[in-house]
Image (cartoon, rainbow, N blue to C red; front, side):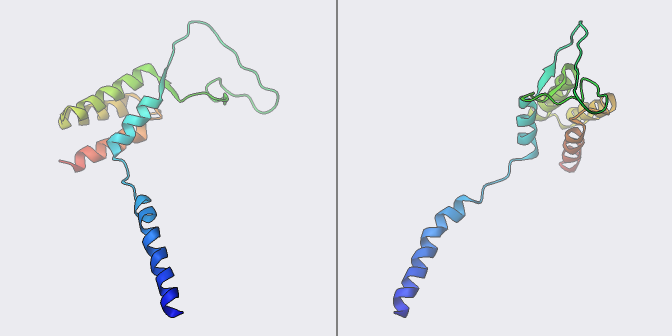
Length: 129
């Protein structure tokens, strides 16, 4: 009986090994996650007309603060293009140029949603030196 129980335990361990090993996936690098993030963002279109939004209840809010169901992450077109240029310098292997580009991005866009990503990229570039 003990041999049979030991056999079942061993069989269970052997069968569980592949699923346990499959659960250990490599985390993507900072650069891969940044590439995916900027691909998901869409640039805001500059409108020459005035738009309005209304609410039923609550405090007054700017149009940028209003939640729209299904809205994708939008960012200023100039911010996105300068961030993409800095990422292109990283891809090209130009570490010094990328550091300068990310530093300029942070200075020019202090309130950007990509600021923390630019700071992380800058820290990664400085650590890689």
